Image (cartoon, rainbow, N blue to C red):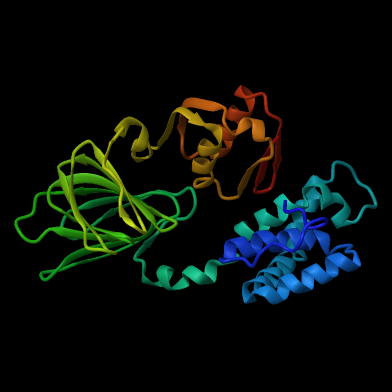
Length: 321
């Protein structure tokens, strides 16, 4: 947590997520602020419109019934203790969890959700068959649409991850749009992952022609290759480890000597809540394992056991320490 007690107010946030993180810190401080902290808080509020919006939303959620329900689960025995007193040791993680669970910024992706033909929630996978015979497997928290007719074969991945099996077709190729990249394919099997403005294309079979939307650069990927496409265009192609990187297609998560912080980051995509690691010494512990992706909580329990970490479980919130 930002040390607001002894430092100047943090710089103005550049995005809603950063503003919310700062707002959660201020939510704690402003429960009993000093005169200096009150002045810093007011300066922070005035520094950006994002700040006031984030603080209002954080406070509304914090004072809502969902967080109070979490407080009841945290009480180990009946006692005449206020909700805030029960929650104080867990204030920041619980507030953060509430923000995420309730979809505080869900209105920002409302246009995307309205455009999508198919949506998956966190932890869900969905199989879709397009009118041209192509098969699509949507991974967790994904949004997808397609238009297949005599004039065009176009699909769009608005967010998330999808595995495509595209049959041979005598007509025009299937065009797939995923943020910073467009793919053109015939008779191939490949995956596209599009998260946080960055796309990853992984080819299992056949060839995939790619075009960067930013600068119109082009590249062809062949079977066994993978490439990352960010705001600045293509990275160098890399060798695809299909057994690990495409394990999700078979309903598995496979890690080989992977730092725990990266493992937890991947698990968060499948867990409909919040997974927090408060022990920095665990972050670089390497993990090797093969797990079911539909049981992320069991995976966290297993990781806690093999790393001798303490695990605390609350409704929609898991803390490793």
